[in-house]
Length: 280
Ligand code: ATP
Image: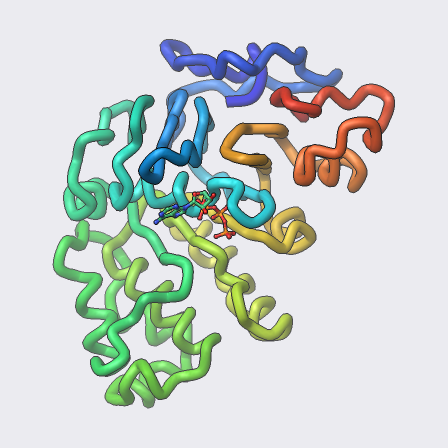
């Protein structure tokens, strides 16, 4: 959640969200598909997230950006139910899923492509896809449909996942999530370790997913890639929100300031040093 204009009714506003929205800011109305409210999460004694709030609306490509250790994966894993937050809540289409187990969240429509793919290397491509179908919701995405999306995959369906290239493994990991027919697809660092051309190919599948009604929340360390695909960006710095809003018209300096916490190197109206800033 970014500024006062964007706090959905009943949402817990981020206590740091004191900055006024910039001129031209449009309120986002209705019920968010995914609503994260004031999430704080720890790894042992280390606080990885502090009061992070965000609202993802249907059709968004919502990108979380931030440097190493900013808390991006912890946020995604918390939404998927793989990490238990300390405080705060997570709502899917208005229903509180904060205490639900990961498989229940999959069945409710939250699927995740984890950082590093995490395929079963000794299983075949098809077996990996079927692993994802155990808690599937009914819907258009089947193994066959995944083979249509990634045409090379059908003829290599009996190959072990470990024998695939990084890009191919990423595609299988996406397919595994798709066969659960998610409402929200969480993508953690798709581009990690992949050549730019492969990254472009992977990202080129997004329009088809969106056209099919899937909403996307992704973590991306490559900021230019994130800006290229995102309808909304959210920058984390040391577990706190430093910037949230529409990426249109935002200057590289402003993003850099939010990304690195470079107070003093930002534009004159920048308010992101230690505070959340609303873009639009
Ligand atoms: P990266 O891009 O490097 O994956 P990130 O933005 O995804 O970083 P997280 O992985 O969420 O950040 O990590 C947030 C903080 O929590 C970091 O300080 C990290 O060292 C710490 N952390 C993450 N996972 C663990 C863990 N399993 N045990 C202890 N600390 C952890």
